[in-house]
Amino acid sequence: MSWKAGISIDRHNMDENEVTAATFTLRDLLVRLGMRLVLAESCTAGRVAATLATLPGISAHLCGSFVVYRSDSKVRWLGISPDVLDDPHIGPVSSRVSSLLALAALEITPEADLAVAVTGDVGPGAPPQTDGRVFISSRRRQSQDHEEMRQDVELQLKCPAPIDQWDLAARLARLEEATLAVLNTTIEFLQSE
View: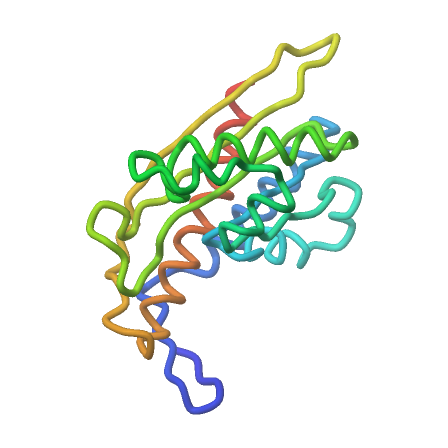
């Protein structure tokens, strides 16, 4: 339990050591493979990049993160079609959009070897079909030594949905769970090579 500005934040048993371990593991993989990562973060709002940035020297392997929380940012910054975002069968919380975000981030960041994108809905007030759903897409750039690799993952967050806009503890727990999921998914992707 931690306190800030009079707000109690229960991390729903999220183990900070898990996040720390995943952060070091991902950094070590990037170093060993000589790779650079770019992120496109929607529902995590830059938390993945901020978590990685706690490690000294990560700038050699982290190009940056496009924090595209709103649909308009996805359109203007990464060129995602408004038609895709507005399509009721696809929408911003979808595998299609996370895939497009990863492709766009990789395309406009020539120094990156790997792009990882995440989109999802952490609540509160999310419709049942998207509540707690997270989509993570990873893309590795094709090179002389490597063919293009891709991975798309969909998961359901286990932390309970926030009850309302004041339930910051539940929202923070979901954000941390999504951040850890991105770190772990990226590790698994890189280890599959």
